Length: 352
Ligand SMILES: [Ca+2]
Ligand SMILES: [Ca+2]
Image (cartoon, rainbow, N blue to C red; front, side, top):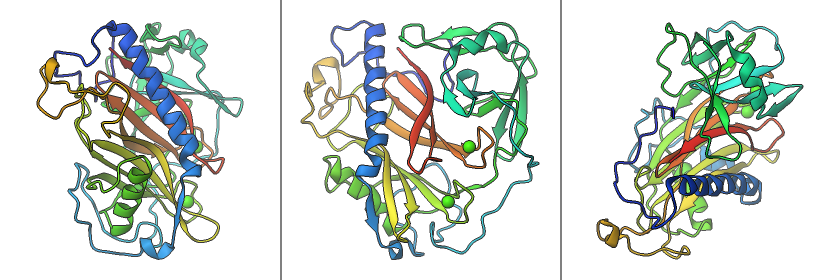
């Protein structure tokens, strides 16, 4: 079974699940993950918290521990006047239809007839197709060689992965598409430093999810103009815990938030995904009998990550490319906000 590279297999040798088989355990987590993000996305608008746009004025970098993504500036992420740079990629009118979307070598689905579709039946016809992967400011092309193979057969709705030609690049988390005829990066994505407004947004979301007074550890913040309307949006992630660990500790969390200016010139914080470990979850108990350290409990966490934002379907609006992962499973997601609210439109993943 082939798996996308960036997410490591578990380093633990025991499972928090005492009886399920690997297959059923993975499916269970899959379903839980599906429910999680669907609920989270659906709940995003409901839990939106409006703040004064003053909250987003320029400030010193926050007091949190920066994540692995280096911040390139600490300017106001939403109301600053720094121009949004466009890339050097050629821009041309969209679009050829259908467009098949890949995360590395996994077929996520298609944009066809003006709609996103899982579209697994297209896979057998992909032999020889050129897939254009967006790697920073460059496009790296690969060719599908041979028939596709099913991906995670254990799941009820399997998708597919393909074999790419020998000249194909090492992908390592890239998203790509067939029939690319437009600039997939019409607006740039810029890492920025955290400000007080970001910490407050994360703290509020975690408190609403049941974890008040959490220490906010920002893992990444990016500024981008999703629609190209001249008004920037911000996506931030914060987390505490170990994504590939079979248990968690009370206080572990992961949250991903989209900040956008609403019609009243205030900032809405839309929760794209949130998980908190409170210790009061059904079935939560010490995992010490399973060899875990003191304090570890049998609650599996879900971690949300932002990967990139590119235009997958040529409409000029960036789709948000995100991940969910946990103990021995992961998911690659595409979120479309063109309707005015975030919607999970494509996804695929795998688990043990
Ligand atoms: Ca915008
Ligand atoms: Ca788009």
